[in-house]
Amino acid sequence: MAEESHQVGQDEIEQLLRQAQSTAPAAPQAPQAAPAPAAKAKPAERQGDVGISQDDIELLLRKAEEALASIDEPADDLPAGVQSFRFQDFAGAPPSAEAATIELMRDVQLDLTIELGRTHMYLEDVLRLKQGSVVPLDKLAGDPADIYVNGRLIARGEVLVLNDSFCVRVAELIVGESACA
Image (cartoon, rainbow, N blue to C red; front, side, top):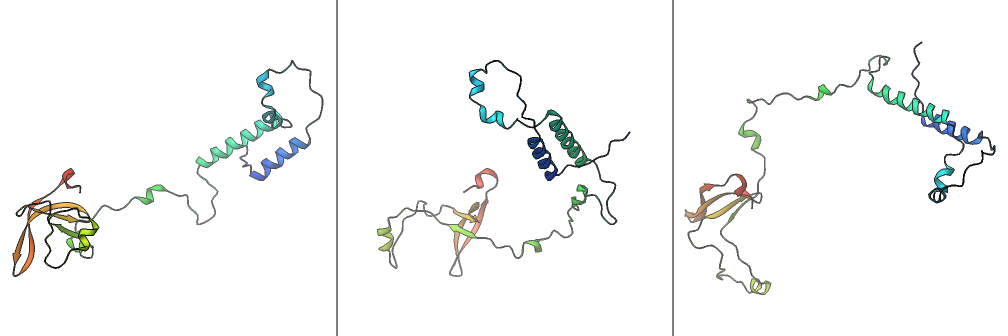
């Protein structure tokens, strides 16, 4: 005889627990030996056990096990037009080499910083700066300038003057672990 699968809802579980507590007989229990001192320290835990029979607990456990087992089984009685969920539908297509061009990078904004050197100054000294002031840096003249993109060191280069404008000629590309700022 095939056992019919029936799922137990939360309302049914609570109703069974209420029935078990309300119909529990208040019959005197058989005399027991004096409880150990450790048992006296836990009267609140033992009060919750009163009124629930072992059969009710086994029934609830069996129903819970059946409900958990039914989760893994595919449902055969789905309504028309409803399909089971399949994870393989999430698989993406392989990347296309034809679509991957430099055009993808056209609108990407980058923060480019050329650092000639660094210095530490007190706020008082910064406030005294005026046109023509000289600020000493930690690098010497002719040392390569650091080129940062989005705060990450990517290259070093030479500072040049071209048509009355400053420019930087990249002399060294920084890759790997040494590229961290």
